[in-house]
Length: 402
Image 1 (cartoon, rainbow, N blue to C red):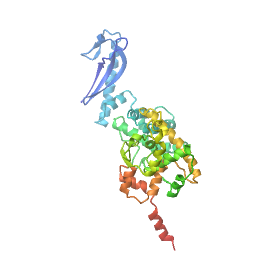
Image 2: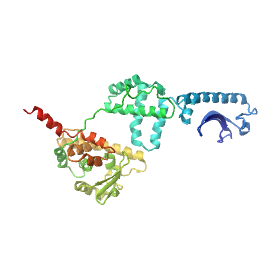
Image 3: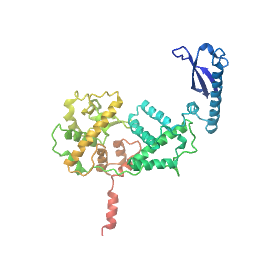
Image 4: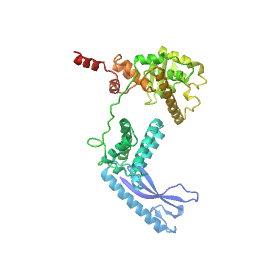
């Protein structure tokens, strides 16, 4: 059951005048569309829902009210015909002619990420929306005009002009698909021209090549004679601690506090998915921790100093500090690679691949799933497939060794 009526909302402006709105109610949920006009309370006929003749512009305002109610009714019938479950929020957007703008919907999507404090996701997806706007060269774009040829042209643009990798291009398409899906869910657009799926634009991540260090290369890093307290020495400690703890991510390493270490275990909540993790602290990690224990107070309770002085309640500031620290650590890891005569691009994240490479098939896949903190064992199988080559190597030798 739907209804559309004019109302005078009880929120006066500085002049003591009240705004005229159109109220749209569907299944006991209401939304409001402002007409942009204010009148005195005594000029409103509450019984007949119209402006009294006492107002000098009563005829014009009542004509406007009738026109807006008629337009809203037409939109409501049109949207109900295509989707009985259309929301009042979607109806309002369509009536004020903003609902089909892809970038207006995108702004709401990004604002919701910020509201939910998903700052990592926000910082990744905001530029992807900007890239799409740059490609289209316009500030507004009807979402229904996003079709397969347009998205293929966008893929080519990202590849050729922005020199973005195939995997990152997929991430750009996922953002567009997510926003499109939210528009369908809210009833802003139907799915008859949906540009994703079979025989259209398919979202599929290309196989990535994950390269970790070998046991010999890790030993070479461990055995480097580095000046205690130097940037290289500190960077090696951070990287090795990550590796020794099954490749925990850089954000989790840098946010580790001494209070997270109790009874010989590290207990922390992962940044990526908020899972709670408990790991035994190996002796090699205890050695690294001993270097930093004298600086507990100086580092603000953190094991490592990168976040000292940063307001931990200001998650944006924390995220920015982690990003800056990661760049700095990766810069010094390149120097470490050179000193250790390692011909690979070493980054903080490669500590995770290194653990996978060295573990190979020594550990059961179920135990690796626990160490990697994967939700699905399929993820662990696919991840570890990058590093288990012995069977394939033996099979190759069996054929050509004659």
